[in-house]
Image (tube, rainbow, N blue to C red; front, side, top):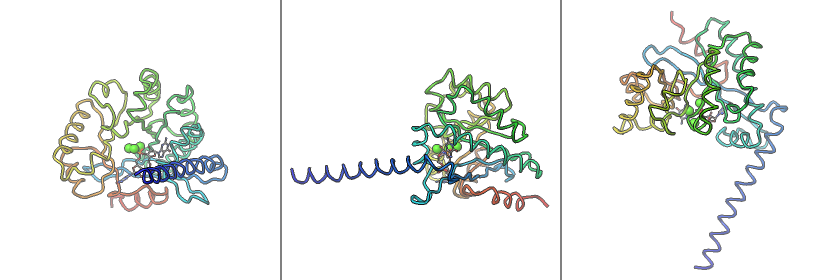
Length: 279
Ligand code: C2E
Ligand code: CA
Ligand code: CA
Ligand code: CA
């Protein structure tokens, strides 16, 4: 038993070491990623559940490194949060999103609002509103072309300051969305306090709606609660036709997910816009 305990311990430390060194490799790689132009932005469309019309996209950061290949944001975003690099890269994503919105607007798609995920660090930056304003100005677009996504847990960490910042952004005309809704505290009274236009139901609730009556009930409640507070409700991670039909029946406003499209380069969105164009 003693021998086995030792063996387990060795496996355990090997795992930890592998994790630590992977993190180190990611950290090192990230430090040069911006100048080496290893980042790109993909866009995942959303559509209106009643009409099927595209309503906008979410900008999602992609990182491809020579040694590591494509690394998931789930792995590298936390590292960038830790090192602080998320500040610079987050601004770069916002810049790309604004420029891209300008292109779609000028091509006759002014409703194609571009959503950008904010990090905790960005929300804490005292000059966030100013840097958003400057990005809008450089791109020559109006604030209503951009949506910022924040999570409940980000707000909960720093409620007073966060709500002030969100209010300022909202007053500028920026749209705000509560991301991953349902995974945090999400009580009615909190939602009322947050000046968000949209709530995005986390995909963990969407997964089993076709088979799990409890999840169906949760979604029904979120949708009616959202609507009674005049919020638009978006379902994330919609993968099947069954889910789409159910969400439509429950009067969810919009959907996003692999069923419509995975995140893709901007050129693919152009193709989608052309193929979905009426007439
Ligand atoms: P998120 O904001 O919740 O983004 C949605 C994630 O769900 C994306 O993962 C997207 O590819 C994935 N997804 C979309 N539809 C489906 C579906 O039908 N099924 C499944 N299984 N997944 C789907 P991704 O791109 O890997 O991003 C993961 C997370 O990384 C994001 O979660 C967000 O929190 C963060 N992230 C990505 N880009 C940025 C960024 O530019 N800035 C910041 N701060 N965070 C980012
Ligand atoms: Ca998001
Ligand atoms: Ca989400
Ligand atoms: Ca998420």
